[in-house]
Length: 90
Image (cartoon, rainbow, N blue to C red; front, side, top):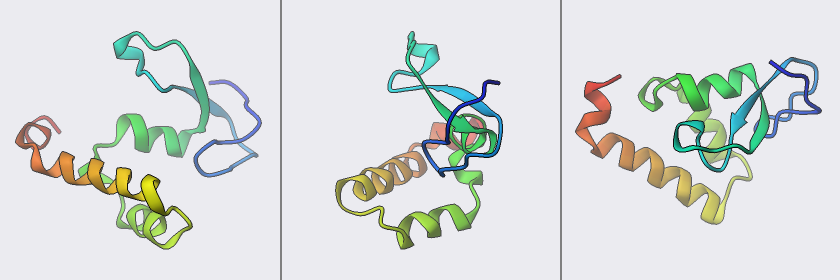
């Protein structure tokens, strides 16, 4: 864990931060990182998409997360659920 300024995803400021490899995942050789709070890092790296709380999806849809960013998120969710191997390994 490291201490960052804020979580790039949720904006939390009063917590410990974890480094998330972005835009290239660590498993693919990525070296650059961003700061995420533990909750957001768990969602991105440790919790399968199918197990995300409905509140997360609802917050995205009801927020100012619009245009191409929202379309990309929706595509990722759709792709995940269309690929059977994602359900077998989780």
